[in-house]
Image (cartoon, rainbow, N blue to C red):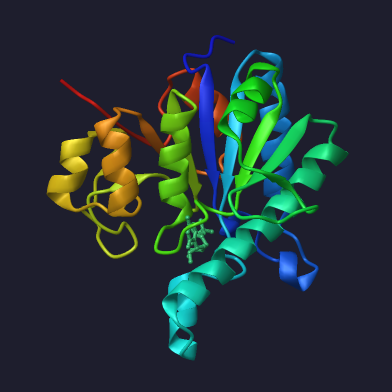
Length: 239
Ligand code: UDP
């Protein structure tokens, strides 16, 4: 298999591992992801993961409880640490070398974020999981994915979702909606497609890092994306 991307950032939202707090983990999808990652590691692809926390707590959804925004976001960031610990253990169980780094201090729970160390581990085919967000409130893990992709000089950001990619309008509500295999950053901004939060998206655009939005439930999707085949929607610089 010829893969056209050498180093990837895979954004896994908390939704993908929903159920963790109800002792009912969505483990089929996660195990498929780990199996596919194991395969591509053996083919020389370097993988980092940015883990979300939305299955547990999102800052914005806590606001209605009357908690202040900064506290809400810290709760959100801690959720990403919980998911990170969980994910790390699953990789360990599947014998895939993995290293968990957190942007917020967690002392003996996980290692602290260190770019130099991350780059070294990636070059040694170790999966690096980034948790704890950026360690700063008012951001989401989409921004983390874009920032870590820039810092690690990655070739693409993969965002696995429950939908197939980007449509002109909601396919559930419109018979005329069109699916896009490819879009430019400008197309996304002009049409106000909701890909990820704007801060994150502008970062990816400015550093010309392609973003692929794809359905995480599609078997072998990761391989098709890395081979440059049609899977999901790819957003990139188009001349
Ligand atoms: N968060 C934050 N700063 C960051 C990253 C995340 O404050 O740098 C908080 C924010 O409240 C967010 C929550 O952590 O809602 C969980 O992250 P996110 O919503 O991105 O998770 P996902 O939707 O990907 O599961």
